[in-house]
Image (cartoon, rainbow, N blue to C red; front, side, top):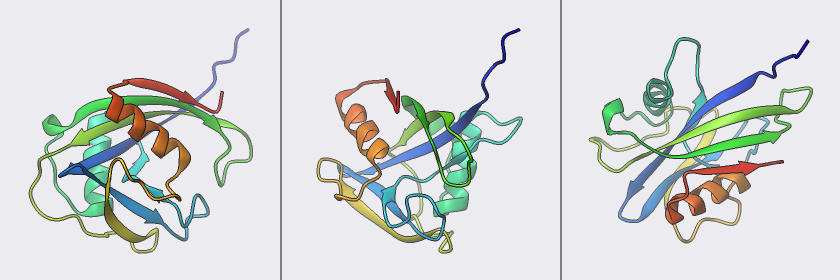
Length: 150
């Protein structure tokens, strides 16, 4: 009998303004601390990818967005070992772009993030999380799907 592997669904936000992307520097999480990533989080049960992105955006950077404004721009199938997981896992990551919103992003989770900064999308900091860099390059090239860790 075949055993089906459980995938972990993740949603991430690419917030763009004037050719710059908002990155947050992870801190005190045990995973990629000190490195730059995107606002993100795991989807919860009975929650669509868009709804999860809206929730995580409000929780992490304080913006209230309309899920209809989110554009799916990339899907990443990722395999690897993450902090807190005793074995290798697989994730399907949904990346949504947002270019219009009201308000200014703020650090709503200072216990998990020690900085929010706008970076030119073509000049990311050296310590950008590698798969985030990969996806942002794919996004700029208009590539909808990629894989990491295979």
